[in-house]
Amino acid sequence: ISPPYNARRVAIFGGTHGNEMSGVTLVNLWIQNGKEIHRKGVETKPFITNPRAVEKCTRYVDTDLNRAFTTENLSAPSGDDLPYEVQRAQQINEIFGPKGSPEAYDVIFDLHNTTSNMGCTLILESSKDHFNLQMMHYIKKAIAPDSCPVLLTEHPLLKYSTSRSVAKHPIGLEVGPQPQGVLRSNIFESMRVVLKHALDFIELFNEGLEFPPCTVDVFRVSEKMDYPRDTNGNIIAMVHPNLQDCDWEPLNPGDPMFQTFDGTTLRYEGAGTVYPTFINEAAYYEKQQAFVTTRRETLAAGAIKKT
Ligand SMILES: CC(=O)N[C@@H](CC(=O)O)C(=O)O
Ligand SMILES: [Zn+2]
Image 1 (tube, protein in one colour):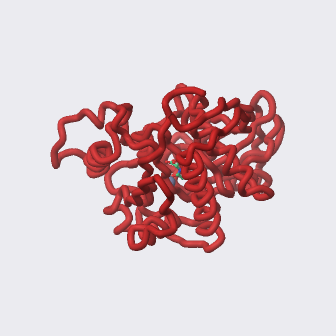
Image 2 (cartoon, rainbow, N blue to C red):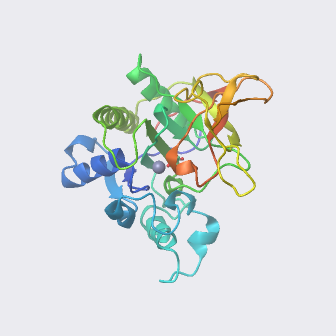
Image 3 (tube, helix red, strand yellow):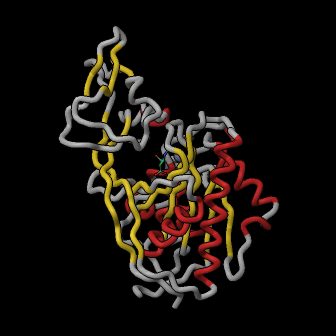
């Protein structure tokens, strides 16, 4: 049984992106009435992370909050001249962090929606986070036969500094497909159900239940794929119909990937099978990303017990 584990202080973030409506709506509901998220021995705080973006129903105001939690931003001298989201990151770091310190919150769930057909995805930032691996194992078992893929974002270049990263155990919840600014009841419900199981797990853990060693199948981020573009940076092809909505399905060398406006098929020419996800995510056009490839991996989690 590894590190001293504790999970008394938990936060649920909504509105890290102000146009992702399931998280915004659930968190606002729970701010009004926290009964549903209350668990024995746990203090759970629902929190709107980017209120100005929520008010405008936009992803962000000045810069993407979910990229803003860098050491550089968090240690910058504070002031009104900083971009709004950098100021906000500093405030969030004060309330829920400081990031990387013993005083930081134990667990932060960050609720997101995607326009991609990713279903109900759990986002894991570290392959060595045994607490989160155990939680994800528990959630996967609880929602079966429905599935709940785990996306591991650990990557030397592609990892980014998320709002949830101020916690000791950061967990992203990414549910789609749902257009920006729209609420869909099925997406809303599946987010709610996953969070219920997650909080149940934390309650069991705090009651002293020991979770034996287990394994978790994950999809590890491999490569970011941009749309084909002309020399001015304009897109010259779309996601191919055979790939559209096929998040988590195998893409093999030679399979259709993009389709140009005159109908030409562009094929995947990588080495070996990959599992694309975030396919045609609206927010990623500005990030030059049509989808991300992942590879399957099985991670081992050691036993955990409250200490
Ligand atoms: C569509 C979207 O916003 N996705 C999230 C993923 C995450 O929370 O890790 C992001 O890019 O910040
Ligand atoms: Zn988001």
